[in-house]
Length: 217
Image (cartoon, rainbow, N blue to C red; front, side):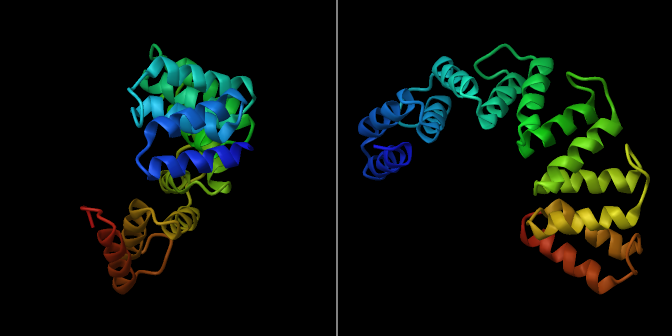
C-alpha cells in the first residue's frame, strides 16, 4: 500500500475508535519512510493521541523526517528546540533549523525566523532581517507574516515607513481571516492613515474583527 493509502486507512481506524490498529498502520507507513504516516505518527506521540505521550519517540520520528530532507520536519525540529519539547531548549538551534527549512521554501519557518530576529532570540536582533523574512513568508501566503510586515511598514522598522504598504499587507492578511489585521485596518480608516478617513469602513473592519473574537475591537 502507498503512504497515502496507509494514512487513509489509519484515519478510518481512528474514526472507528480502534487506536491500536491506527497506530500499527501508521507505524507500517513510517517504517517505509512515508512522510504522511511519519508525520501523523510523530504527532500522535507528541500529543499522546492513540498512544501514551512519548516525546523521545516523537523527536526520533522528527529526525527521521529531517534525514529524508523534508522541510516540514526541519521546521518541526526548530519548533521543538524553540519550545524545549523533547529536547533541551536552544533558540540558536531553533534558528538554525528554521533557516534550513526556510531555505527549502517553508513559509512557517520564514515567519518564525522573522520573529526570532524581531526579538533578538537565538540570533542578533535585526529589524531588517526580520522584515526580510516576513516579506518572504508573506509572499508565500502566510497571514501572520503579512500582518507583521504591515506593522513593520507602519513603524518603519527594517523597511522605509509607508502607511500605504502597511495597508496593503494588512488587507491581504485580513482577507485570509486574521482578526488583528482587521483591527489595524479599522484603526487606519478611523484615523485616515494610508487610506481616506472613513468611519463607516472603520466600523466595518472593527465589526469583522469582533466577529472573530478580537476583544480590542
